[in-house]
Length: 129
Image (cartoon, rainbow, N blue to C red; front, side, top):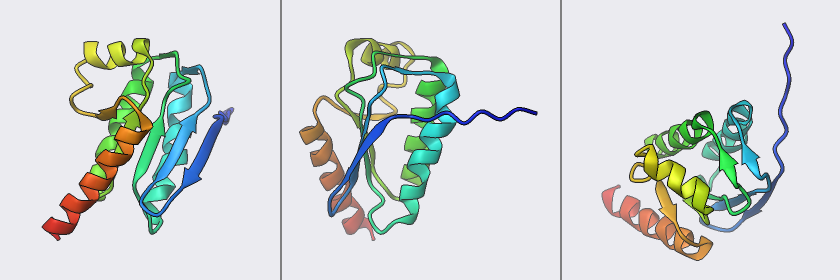
């Protein structure tokens, strides 16, 4: 059996409430979903669990990648953490809308608005604890 590890180019920055990951790839394909999951899941074991994914460079993705984003959103929600996507390019946004995933994901037009969503979700979690 041959195992091929896919490397994904990203930029990661951290502040007191969330980690921001900018995916620096023009295409996210099915073979990258495991790499995306492997990149994101360990943040759930950190003190700051919230994750913001900036997708501004992604011009194209396939259904497995879209399903991967949804699976990550569900995983983060189950662990009381925020998972927000932002700066989607028109093709990616349209893809999510056509496949009825847009409403299931937390998506913001800009990184600033994604940050606001994370802060609001943090406040909501504080009130429900």
